[in-house]
Image (cartoon, rainbow, N blue to C red; front, side, top):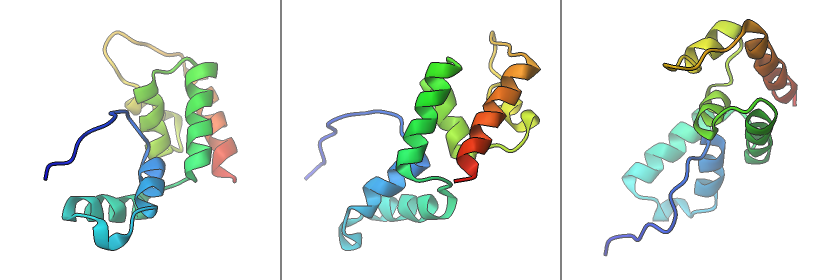
Length: 111
């Protein structure tokens, strides 16, 4: 029987890991198992911290949700890495903006 999609939204790797943690491993399909293994390997924050960080990036720095999620998933360590993630046609940012993003990321990285 096909599964019914109830809601579609973008989430971080950390949130995906938390969701899949709640499911009994025997109930995971092959695709879900692979996603879970990936999330375990590449999760960098707790789901709670990831949500807080996304909120801070979207509200304080006015980043789009998709941009904030990508930044949280990658947790870049340099201005150049942030610049490459945010390199989108039609949008330009000053170097100071990238430094502010990095400063916020470093606050969460220390936890």
